[in-house]
Amino acid sequence: MNRSPRAALTALLAALVAAVVLAPPALAHDALKSSNPKKDATVKKVDQVELEFTAAPKLPFVIVRDADGTEQQLGKPEIDGPVVTQKLKGTLSDGAYTIAYRVVSSDGHPIEGEIPFKVKGAPQATPTEEPTPTAAVSESAQPSATASAAPVAQPSEQAAEQDSAPGFPIWLIIVIGALVGVGIGFLLSARKKKP
Image (tube, rainbow, N blue to C red; front, side, top):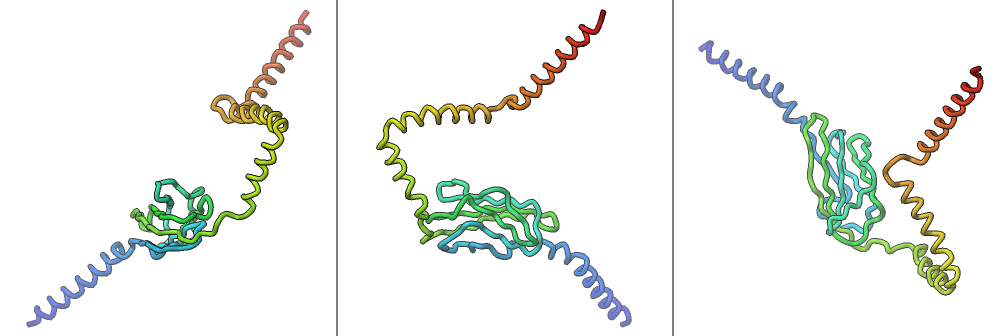
């Protein structure tokens, strides 16, 4: 009879040890706690998205796409504790959107998912954008000013394209040219000093 209580006690202790040893890895998996906008929500205004996890994530990757698949995010996501914030290119217009995310949890496991939402009743464009057509009409009313402005704009655009074109930067060519000029000057002055 002594063996039966000891066996039961040993089995109970073994179960407790197993629960203590094996439970932390199972509980360590982080998860998405909440999002703004929420899954399947319809909102009026969205200019950034927020994802809150149960612990601080690492290496966040967030993409916000509209129904056509056009990406709306701007820059890289920012982490503040368990919250990941992704800025957008601007306030989203009416339509269906999806937030696709992937982060690494605090225990090293990847967490990924998608959050669909809709924007309805988004604020219209501000009136400051409307005067642009009026300016275009007034410019077209004066053909001589438009004709003279066009050739000036094209060379500056071409210069900007040349500056952004791949190859040597202009400043590097100038520096190399200056160094070559200094080198030639030293050689000429050294030759003149020799008898």
